[in-house]
Image (tube, rainbow, N blue to C red; front, side):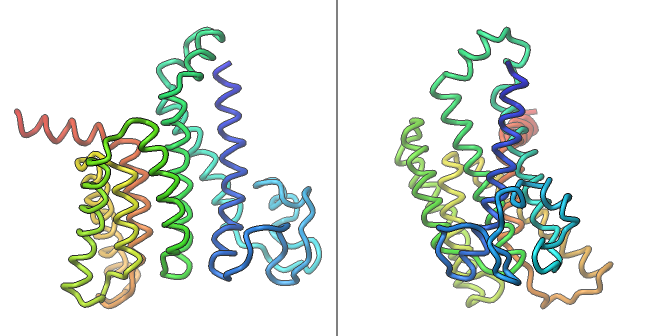
Length: 271
């Protein structure tokens, strides 16, 4: 039974990854989110059998069936990574029950709190992948995507019993952290979109300790990446770096390992 749900998580993740590829492109081009997918180069509609995550890209050898123009490797890569992360989220939440009998595991799946946390975690992964792609490609944060994602996550937060005061405090901390940097640097290095993203991360991590872990992780990853760019890629200090990319990575890392990091840290303090 457990393996059926693991496989289902993979398939769902692949489908969501395909949707995210389409979503970020249409958001950037300000296109309608409805309607069939089409090739951005020849504008031909894509048939369903050419839109199967990962497999269609491999079958078509990375090119459009109609115009034979190359299809970016981003598409299968995002689909694959989303699928794997969905499986890992499922294991993170239900891993303790993988050895249960089929009936016991099914009953475990149907527990409202765990199921709600699973869907919420999948939503966070999907949103952060979207932020990663958008900022990596265009050095921008899509405010409509951030706002609507925040509304959905807030609904889950309240339904799962997170305190409103804790949520509000985390949102204010996240937004203020980047807002203060925006004011001090007069918008150099920090954009307005990063302030909104900080607020969104507060909704993702109503526990302020997890929020700070996510932000700290992001800056550590960013600092390491900056050093590599300087000494290996020969980039200068004024090279623009997509902060949203690092915040997305920090959020996903915290989603999986944040509690362990906090326990380790407090263990050091109490030692």
